[in-house]
Length: 606
Image 1 (tube, helix red, strand yellow):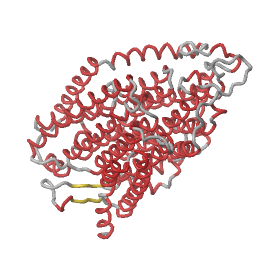
Image 2 (tube, one colour; image 1 turned 90 degrees about the vertical axis):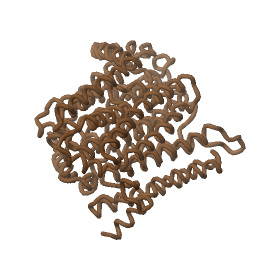
Image 3 (spheres, helix red, strand yellow; image 1 turned 60 degrees about the vertical axis):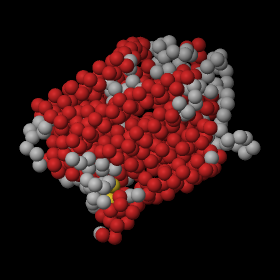
Image 4 (cartoon, helix red, strand yellow; image 1 turned 120 degrees about the vertical axis):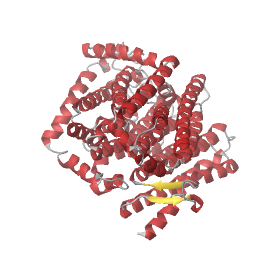
């Protein structure tokens, strides 16, 4: 195995070097040719990520590489275990899809002058890619801080790429809150260095495990770092920056922000709670993280139902789907294999599905000049591939067989049953039905709604301002299919998730989850609640002969009793969401969460 390990050590450098090479060459080439260079680099990066995944899976152990051949604490160590390999491959796949999509969106036609937007987009995309790969491979807390900052300072300008006042305001809000998170993380890292004399995660884990008790500095450091990372992840109620940032960015940028950027800080929370201090999983802190995840699922989905714009609906859907990730913390205390596998599959499935939805929304907005949901009438016939891709990605989020969402919810539910925490299962069921509600609402308008401004019985096909490119539609459809068909991968492929961890047989738990997935009783049991929700929602959508019902606000577009009841609930949650996204409320949430986590660690410490 030494040959494989040697190969892996060299390959670990490539995902970090390729973006840097692109940044340097991009300043020379300019925006006109940079898109093609980025495409070549991302293809090479995907090959490197697949090679790392293959080596880790076949070798059955984590790969390490010492920069400059210096060992920690003096040197910096890179490591790719199963989780890192999965994240590298997921990042490369989504990045490739976005780069292919962006070739047309940021193309400079021949004979026209080069624009600032094209050059800046590709450079920032390379910065995001480099930051992500460093987060997934780094094992030093300061290296990870630098990677997070590279990620933040590359992602924030993507939000404001259009230069519109509202996007500038959203980017500034994102920047300020992310910097607060960075400050908290850095303060925690400083406390750890002062207490243990190293920032290497492996060495820190050994020294913390060998201590008789957790000192106050350690508890304070973990609480500070966790809260800082939660702010960057935009976990409810620390999400004041996410909806306007994700909804205002260009579609390709929104896809990256939602699919990958928020997952980087979540990945570091996994590193801290599972690798640096696994003893944290036995404290009450996991229940706090689970409660925040449950709040995200319920509030995010309900507020999504209230949205008028398609991209804002998808942004709130991201807020809700982030919540599933944090349910794995309380569930891992009793069933770590199922919980961790389910959580990581949610990362992969959501990345593909949400990137597909944002890019599909971008194609729709470019085609008809807006993304108002009530104005989508006839779009399913005008853009059938795009709407199909959007619907398939939504089905993956619902959790129907054989999607990644199904695997996620089945594994997390089995972990809830095994650990006696049944209430988390109820939250997931409610989240799935609410997801079905907003998905059917969009599809109902797209398929059955009348085109805005047309009388009843008139031609309902919308006038397309810009037809989407075939390659763009193909990319969006492939991403949606990746999310939808994730459960059909052979179970041995999921063994990758368990490499480098004791007692995690991901392939076995996935096999059990899929064993009865296609039984008629199971299929019908999962399908009928979704169908009922669909019928209720479609009853609230204006049909072709209700053309006069087309309104610009969601409340006026729901003539049925069920629709009005849903809107009334949505109004309450939307107002609560509006309050929470004010700076004083967000600051108070940060403080209370910090105190709550620190208190839970004090009472749970040894």
